Every structure is written in C-alpha cells, then in structure tokens.
Image (cartoon, rainbow, N blue to C red):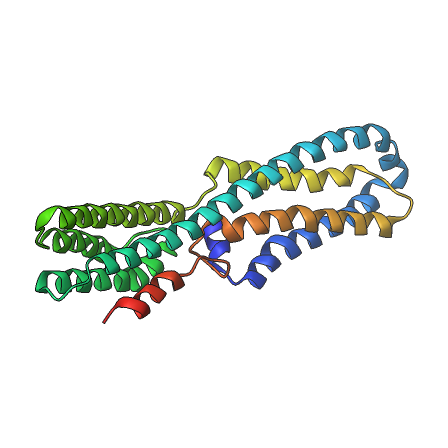
Length: 258
C-alpha cells in the first residue's frame, strides 16, 4: 500500500489518505451523536479526556519519530547521488589522457552514468535495480584496470581512481537500498492503526456544540493523516512526485563526456 500511494500523484494520495479518512471521521461523529445521544456521550468526557491525552502523546511521539527518520534517510539518498556524481567527475579528471586505454575508460564511465540515469532510476521507482547498470559498473572497473601504470606517480593516480570508483559503488548501493523503502512493514501497521485509533477516540466525546466537535475531529484527522502522507511521500526516495532526481549525474555527463 505505501508503494501504491507513493507512486500516485500527490493530490491523489492526499485525497485517499487525508481527505477520505477525514470525511469518514466527521461523518462518524455525527452518526454516533445521533445514535447514542449527547447525554450518553457527555458522561465519557472526563475519563475519556484523560485517556485521550495519553493516546495522543504516544501517537504524536511515534509519528514524529517516523517523520524524522524518513526525512534523514531521504537526505541520505540525495547525498548519495551527489557523492556518486562527485566521484564520477573526479574519475573523469584523473583518467584524462590521449592513450586508447584512458579513452576507453572514459567511454565506459559515460556508459555507466547513462545507464544509471536511463535504467537505474526507472527500476528504483519500483524498488529494484538495473542489471545493465551493474554490468556497466563492472565494465568500468575492468576498463580502469587496463590503463597502464608506469612509475610511482601513475601508481598513486591509479590508486586514487580505484578509491573514487569504490565511492561510486558505495553510493550506488546506498541509493539502491533506500529505493526499496525506509519504514518496515510492522511500523506501517502501527502507524495506520494508531492513526485510526487516535482519530476514532474522539467519537467517545460529547460536546453541546456538535458543529464544533465535528470541526475539531476533522482538524485532528487532517493533522494525523497529513503526517502519514508526509511519511509515505518520502519513504521511497526515488518514487513518486517527491523524489530524488538524477540531475547531478546528468551534469557530469554534460561536463565531461565527449
């Protein structure tokens, strides 16, 4: 379900996850009032208010924790892409030269970046990885290792190139891992059940002003499910409207690939 909601346009996810539950909660408040009556619900206000404060705090802490963790991981995904692009640009500079082996290595790096953009990104949108991009990365390593190493200076450059290639590999593995989703299934279960229980708890209250109670229930529902929408929107950093793009890699291609 989170992948389904993440892949939808933001307005559609908002309708399903925020607007619809809010309408249900507000309608439920009216129906419960008509079914049980104000006097019956009024008796619950004192004890229900105390318990609702506890329920609200517990869920608020859980929701805030989930938002913070997901946002940090989303930032990690952005950082990984930038680091991958930076390492690729460094490799381009270090393997510059007229030798055929260096030209082949630059071509292999360009092929990898193009496949990362054209194959990895669409695959990551559904939580997968591109085998073509993986093979291109292996070809890049092979092309770099074929560059002749003559003298201490070239040995140092070669070691630095391999170090930057390792950074590319690590950054790619990071984004592929984050593309599968950040929040575990059990946490999703707790978040959705907690949201339903927290909003549903308002049905135990009885206010003389029904319109005010319905409005307060709607406001609470928007806040709770709006928090869930924020989590779902960035849970998969490479899926949906709010996603990490491949622009840093594209910039490297434009700047160095010939």
